[in-house]
Length: 336
Image (cartoon, rainbow, N blue to C red):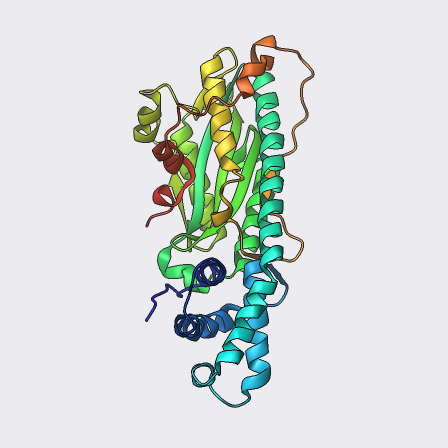
């Protein structure tokens, strides 16, 4: 029997997406196909919600579930599935095959949107740095405690994010002297729904980035009624790891230091990655976004130091795969 973690909505949607990819791209036997469905359908029906938009891979799975519900009548889903004829199983698989092009198109559009978000955010961060002698960059990752994930739906997650965005716009408390921010929403099988947040403060007004990061995490815990958790990426240990290799792009960044600027832009670049489609939101409330950035009005001053074209170049080869994981991937985010 195949084993899935089906303990909360985010991981169920991830499991459904993985199953559809498996069924479309590998030579999955009919028996294995049915075994997958026997596990996934009851979990999917538990966490299915109204008022949401599913990724194409999850939507076609829902079509399969609907087709089965229309024909099984009073039989349990497992009883009905195990009695299907070969032609009926092929019919179910054909539903998935017919949706392959929509799935591939959605992945293509996701990558294009992420690339557009990335370019826009890089220009935004560069402009803020250009306008200030120094800025303080704080990176935190926000999610939920393992034991609370069962109770967190995508609607709950977006309500919490909307509350956080209100605080970001108000710029009070730990967000005082905030110049700009980037907020990327993702989901994963181990982390559930989570967010990567990059904050840019006026460095002439703010210091102690590790302390600010902790305060932001505490604000998130308040917003989530104690169900939330966070990862402080501005600890001395993490910063030292990157500083030893000349890669430090968080903490105090000076307009006159091109290496610091390049590293800060690399941090911004990894906040929004077209390659991270495996961590994209597979379900979200209708009409909602997955990336947010603040509104910034430039000073209008021209500082050649930062406008040098090579600052936004593709000099990211010096960043190893492990460096990327430390900033944005599953292995470094949100542990109780």
